[in-house]
Length: 407
Ligand SMILES: C[S@@+](CC[C@H](N)C(=O)[O-])C[C@H]1O[C@@H](n2cnc3c(N)ncnc32)[C@H](O)[C@@H]1O
Ligand code: SF4
Image (tube, rainbow, N blue to C red; front, side):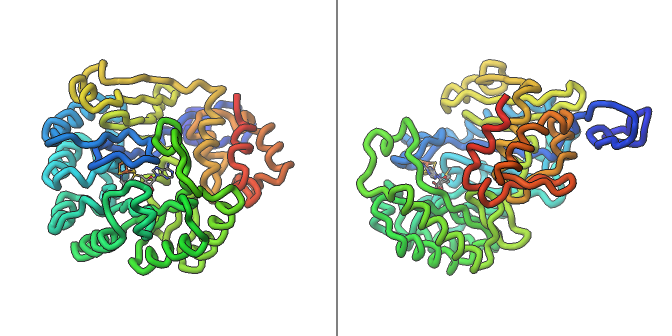
């Protein structure tokens, strides 16, 4: 619990409007746990995630052992803090048998304090959904599923190198629903090679029919170090056509009751991803597993630390639990904090309060007064009392807005 300052009643991080003068204190925000599971059946040609095509039997047990050693090593960073969400991301976490996920969650709950309403999400490739698995993921404690469907157009799925067709995607969702999952996300991508507006519209209609509580709607990007980047596929919609698709889909999503709360995230009321919201609100997270990134605030040391692990699964397994598994540690210094904060917060429609800015960075609100005024003057942001928000125009030019906050 934060203690009040000894010269006033304000808690560290609270703004003191009185005549006494002191810097805000960094207050550790909510804490999440990200767990990276790095293998896939096959590598998709557009994907730059730390994911590797599985060759032969996967070392599930050895990897879970490595995850537990990795968690043990990071525990001193978060002693006593409550974890509010867990996210198994990949790669394809659904390649891991439910028993392996169960063993990790049991080990984690013996080491960390889990919140009573803990959100536990598992990313699932529909091509790996076997009958009976979802019951066992549920029994292990997974209470939210995220399906990577991308599109319901079978030709497009082939062009994207996916291992499933649209029928399998629908069956996977139904299997999860039969196992009692009502809280689930569907990932779709748009601006796909040769995609028409009507096809993007049809993708949303097929998704709505499955009644997900959450939809992630990503524009396909050509990422360096991918097959698509080296050899772009024919017929990628140009910027104007991609914008038309996006605007049209945003309207459809709103009409179907999915409120946009982030650049690519839409949810039914109360069904936002708590895990992702915590990232975007500049919350804290432990990153466990090959290539995982974490961000942890230390109230005592008054700093924000970023830590990442070795990317390669075998190197990670060989070194997990020792300093050699750490790819890097980076304390974000004060001049960089406003930019890092804005990079996340300006993705959110809700914006942020200046009080939260102070408690999550430990900086005075004065540190962003100039760029904030510049953003307001350009019509990119509004400030209503303590509450700053991006405008619709600002959301179109997020990169430009964030750049104003560079050191
Ligand atoms: C880790 S994957 C999800 C789970 C699983 N690996 C799968 O693909 O089914 C995360 C999501 O990021 C999105 N994604 C990956 N690469 C992308 C790209 N180049 N452009 C846009 N979205 C991308 C996809 O929608 C994908 O489902
Ligand atoms: S299945 Fe998912 S993580 Fe794996 S390569 Fe494809 S998009 Fe990337």
